[in-house]
Amino acid sequence: MKIHSKAVHSGDRKPAGRHIPVTTPIYTAASYFYRGSIETIDRIFAHEEEGFAYQRYDNPTNAALEELITDLEGGFGSLASGSGMASLHVSLTAAIQNRRKSILCAEAIYGATIRMLQNLFEPFGVEVAYADVFDLEGLRRMVAERKPGCLLIETISNPLLRVADIPAIAEIARAADAALIVDNTFATPMMVRPLSLGAQFSVHSATKYLAGHGDVLGGLITTDQEHFETVRALSRSYGPVLGPFEAYLTMRGVKTFPLRFERQCANAARLADWLRAHPQIERVFYPGDAAHPDAEVIRRLFPAGLYGGMVSFEIRGADRQRIFRFINSLQMIVPATSLGDVHSMLLYPVMSSHREVPLEMREQRMGIRENLVRLSVGIEDFEDIAADLDQALKAV
Ligand SMILES: *Cc1c(COP(=O)(O)O)cnc(C)c1O
Image (cartoon, rainbow, N blue to C red; front, side, top):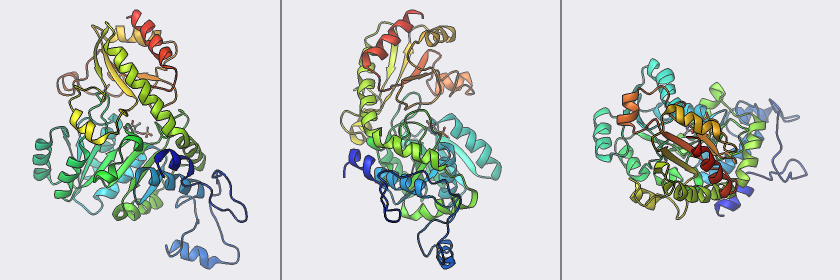
C-alpha cells in the first residue's frame, strides 16, 4: 500500500471479541486480565505471548498507533511517548546502552534537545559534542577522533531549513559502530523515511505534522529489530508512555496527514515564490530553491514537488522592534510556538527557539539574524496567507 492508504488503514480494525470497531477505541483500562487464566498473564510478563497486561507496558490504542507509524516509517517497531522530548530521551538512552557513552549531535538542532543533553546526559558522565553535519569531511574526522556511540541529527534543520545527507551520515556512523538517530519531525515520512536510508532510529514530535491540529503533545520512535526490545524495555521501566486519549487523537490526525501535508507543501512553495518577489523581503530560506546549499541532497532524498511546509524569511532592515510590530499586525496567522498545524503559525527564533544562544554564536556561526522569522504554513487558502503577510509587512 502507498502512504495515503496506509494512513487510513494500518493499525485499525482489530477484532474485539465478536465485533470489529471501524476505528480503534480509547482504552483507558490501567490493567487487563484473562478470566480463568492467570497463566496467560504469566506468559505475557515472560514475553512468551503477546497481550495486554498493564498500561505502562502496552495498551490497545497505543499499539494501533505504533503499528500505523511503523508502517509509515518502514521500521521493525515503534513506541508512542508522552512528548517528542521523551522519544528523543528514550532513543538516545537505547542507542548508547551498549555503546560508548558519547553523543555527537548536530549543531543546528532543536533548542530543547541541547538542553536535554546538558541536563539529562552530561551530568551522568555522557560525553556530548556538537558537529556541523553539513560538512561531511569535518564530521568524518570528528567521528574518527571522538568515537561517539551515537549521532543525533535532524532531517531538516530549524529555522534555516538545511537538509542533512542522511545516507552519507549513516555511512560515517556505521563505519564507527555508532547508532544514528534522525529527528524526522520537519520532513515527516511523506518526504523521508530515515530507516530506509541507514538510520537506526526515526523520531517524531507527533505534536507537529502527524497529529497536526495543535491539540496533542506526543512523540513517536520507530526503530530497527536490533534496538526495538531495548526501547520497549526502557519504556516499561520508567513509563514515558503516551496517554490513550492522545494516542487516539494522534491516530485520527495521521489519517488526514498525507492530504494536509501535500496542501501545506503546495502553499509553502507558492509562498516562497511570493516572498522572493516581495520588495520588503531580503532573503527566503526554502528547500525548494534551486540555489539551496543542499540542492543536490534534496534532489536525491525528497520526492519531486515536496519540499516541506516550512518557509523562513528575513524582513529587509527590520530590527527586533519592527519584527514585533509585524507579528502584532498579523490578523489570521497565529503567532505561537509549534508548527505543522492546520493553521499557519509564525515564530520569531531570536525571541524563542534561539533566545539563549549568544549573539555572536547565533549571527556569525549559525547565520540566524535579528530580522528572521519562521513560518509554518497551514492549509488555509494561499491568497489569505499572502494577504495577511502583506498587510502586516506594511506595519514594519
Ligand atoms: C517540537 C520538536 C521537538 C520536541 O517535541 P515535543 O513534542 O514538544 O516534546 C523535537 N524536535 C523537533 C524538531 C521539534 O520541532
